[in-house]
Image 1: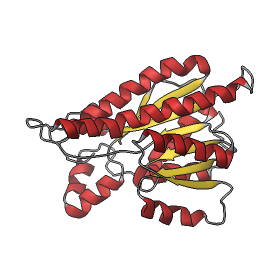
Image 2 (image 1 turned 60 degrees about the vertical axis):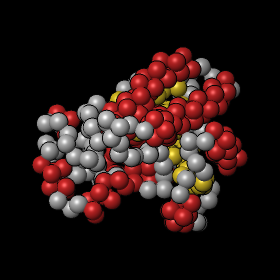
Image 3 (image 1 turned 90 degrees about the horizontal axis):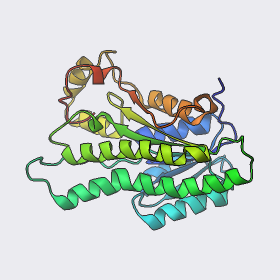
Length: 268
C-alpha cells in the first residue's frame, strides 16, 4: 500500500489554526504542494511565514470560505500557483452554541452555510477541475480525493449546540451523496469525524474551564486527548493511493469516545 502524496496539489480550508493547520502542515511535510486557505489573515500570515523560503510548495489564500466568489478565487489562485489540484480538505468549521427551544433561524442558516454549504460548493468547483484534468490523463488515473472534516456532534446530540449538530449531520450526508455522484469520474469523497482531539475550539474551552480536560479524558476509552496531528494522519491515508478503493466513508477519530456514554461536554 502506497501512502505517497509526493507531487500532489492540495487545498486545505481552515488552515490558519487547529485541525486545518495540522492537516495542511502534514500534507506539505509529506511532499504535497499545499494552498493554506483561511479567513483569518493575521493568523494565516503567521503560519505561512514558516514556509517563506519554500514558496514553490506552500502558498496561502485569505478569504471568507463561505462566499462563492472567494471560493472561485481560491481555486484560481491554486491553479495559478500549481497548475492543478488533486486534493481538497474542507476543514473550515464555524462553531457556535444555540438554544434548542429558541433557535434563531438566521443563526441556524449561517451554521448550515458555513459548515455544510461552503464545503459542498467548493467541492463542486474543485471536482469540475479534477474531471477536466482526468480527461487529459487517461482512464486509469486517479482523478482526485476530497475529505470533509466534521465532529461527533453529527451523531451524538448536544442540545446546547443544536444548530452545529444539524450542520455536521448534513455535511456527512453530503459526503456520501457526492461520493456516489463523483465515483464515475474516479473522484473519491470521504469524511473524518473527530472528538477528543485538540482542536482550536477545544484549546479555547480548556483555557476557560481547565476541569473539562479530566472529564473528556474520563469519557474517552483510550484515556487521552489526541493532538491534531493524529487526525491529519487519517486524512493523509484517505487522500493517498492507499485508500484508492475507499469512498463515501466517515472515519471516526475519537479514541473510542463514540462507543462510551453519551457525550455531555460542550466542546467535542
